[in-house]
Image (tube, rainbow, N blue to C red; front, side):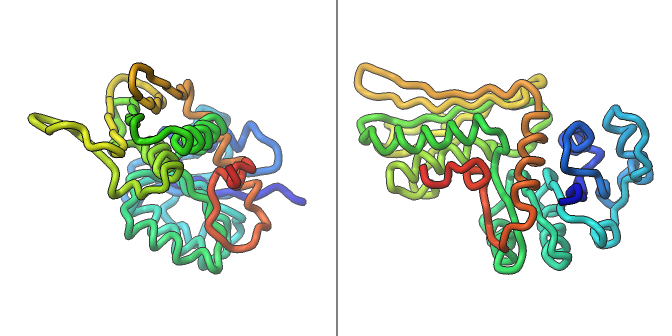
Length: 271
């Protein structure tokens, strides 16, 4: 099979540049396009140079329809509005769409899922192997421990992150809720402040820390009578997310239409 031709959305951003580097460092894929927001001062810049690599003659453009003509997939770690716009074009073109964007609303996710009867979408709040293994373990532990164990999720990210809780924290919360057989929306506590009253049994708590250059730290603590169990993951470089997204794209190439997750990519969907 020939190399998979991939577009990087948000190619001028931190994650976009990491994705460009990951493609350059890996076998089986080539960069086919570099997408950036309309009006960006980076339009026309060389994607390779922006990523700290030799020039690759692929210029940042805002025209996804044109660049997707000869592409096989798109790696998308942007913002909700951009991702939703990209979903429609990717589905029309019939290319794989790897979605790592966080901060998506329920309606955004509904739009993404609406195209998966005819398009391949791989979506995850985190593309790393370690985090997805952590989510599988969290689900198992939550299932094993009853409500006498409270569940608290703490995440730390760099000062520039704009959404909270992180997509990874919500993914871990969903894993815990699934293990407990409840819905996260109805059993979630966020942003405690002031006189909050006693903790509600069975709820899953979230706390978000922001500062410095942290790529992403997450911990899930089960607090029971007289003992605590903490499961955690530390990301040391966002390149791990880029390589995970690339792995997802290569895995999805040729798959039938559907909505897939990193658990599917890693063979963890039955855990």
